[in-house]
Image: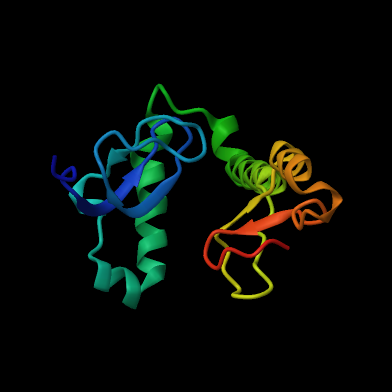
Amino acid sequence: MSEPYRREYEYYCPKCGDCHFITYKDNQECVICGYKMLETPHEYNLTTSEFENNTQTFYQNEQRLFDEIISKLLKFDINLYNNRDNILKQREQQYDINQAILESKRPPIIECPYCHSTDTKKISALSKIGDAMLLGFFSPKIYKQWHCDNCGSDF
């Protein structure tokens, strides 16, 4: 299946008033309130080069869009609009916390000290017991924790 049709315009959220000059995919949700983003009328849009050359005009168009359209919508929530920065900051902080939790749950990456491969696995207790039963305390696996699948060494 091909990628959804992409257009590059400014989009706005009719609920919180957030605006973005983005490459849009159908049904994109607002990053602040989760409401569906809408394409701005063309008279409020700038081309990418116009935006890059004159960001002041972009902000003037954005303010005009807010004054003439967004603020008059029934769905518009002034409290969301006034707290957009705080909501976005809270979401970013929660994202950072979630990323830290995910990182802490990942198993450590063990590198073989001989060939420096990370294709390693922990030697199981069952494997150590089986080896000890066959070779006794002279088994080389008894005192090792990791096995390298690349070079075959135990360490």
